[in-house]
Amino acid sequence: AAYTIDSPVTTRLLQGQLFQEVISLMEAKINGSLTPDRRMYYYSGHDYTLLGVQGILGLNSSDARVIKPGSALVLELHQNNQTGIFYFQALYIEGGSEDLEPSYFNITGCNFPCDFNLLKNITEKYYNIIDYTAECHYNNTSLF
Image (cartoon, rainbow, N blue to C red; front, side, top):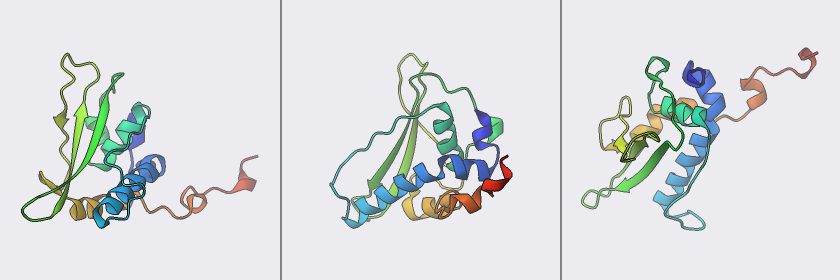
């Protein structure tokens, strides 16, 4: 499953759309346009889904590990009550651990707490895919 984060292009094509949806939902929450106005979204995926999103957040293939059943990646949007600034944090729950306690996932290039706008700048190269056919260099006539 480490191949899912082996290159930025692979990560972009496999998990970019999911991460773009997460960013879009968080942006809608920030600007008050989220409909319906929810506090939480749940997504289910496979080990390569978790690795791909971790890759977007800065995990490289040499640090990739086997994702155990029951593992989870929690992506949170928070607002500092004093400054009004929004920030992002990621937590990882190791499915095979005794206590299933979440641990902070360090985001490459973004100190904790990670400013939401900085996160978008760091990760933007992995989403905003407009034309999958062009990005994948897909040519229908070359398959057979």
